[in-house]
Length: 160
Image 1 (cartoon, rainbow, N blue to C red):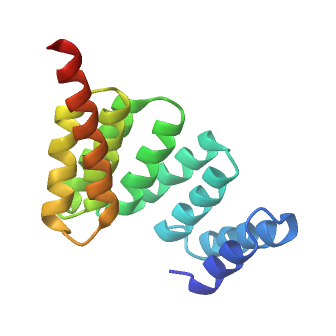
Image 2 (cartoon, rainbow, N blue to C red):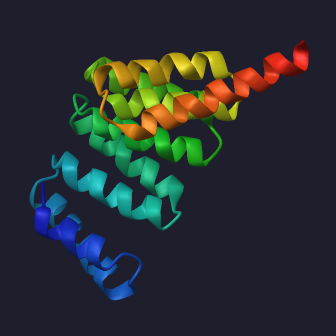
């Protein structure tokens, strides 16, 4: 991974010149090594943050093509698809991330969030439970589960 390049981007997010510098450096890394999946992924991240979602997905696809065994790349693509409202495709990407790494809690959590947004609270709770089982020390998973349970309780009260 290009730690220094990522720092350039993170420290100067959305600041034109430095952002372009980071993109140029990642592109140079790809020119030197066209199989640098990490560089494609990092470019995808920059495009995602710049709301260039189609470009982000293209670069995440390139990263996945080069290294299909990195769960992060599927998660990032899933987030981009979700941003476009393509939720079922996003869920499939998160499921691919879980196939690659069955302990990848972010993927379970992200599936849960999509299901929660679709008011599929029981399924959302199942995914938050799995994230909590794997990583019982992450407060956000409990918060997300709590919200889904709260909504389930409200629905039950309304139907009674």
